[in-house]
Length: 63
Image 1 (spheres, helix red, strand yellow):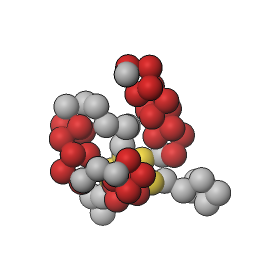
Image 2: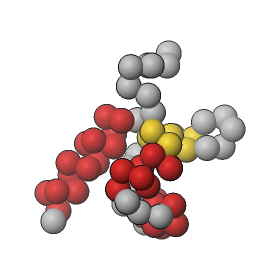
Image 3: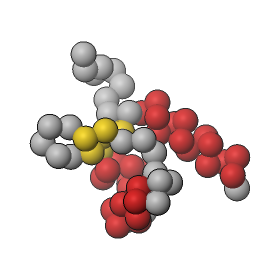
Image 4: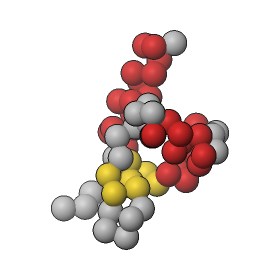
C-alpha cells in the first residue's frame, strides 16, 4: 500500500533538504551513515519520511 499523504523521499529530495551533493549522500550510504533506503523496482532509491526524520533526530545526538 502506498501512502499518498506522506510520500517517500528521493535522493534528490534528501540532498536538497540537507544541502549536500548526491556524491556526499552516496558516500554516507557506502559508510552506513545515510538514512535507511529502499530500492524500488526501477533501481532508484527511496527514503521513508519517518526514517529520514528519525535519522535526522539521531544526528543531533551525535553532535
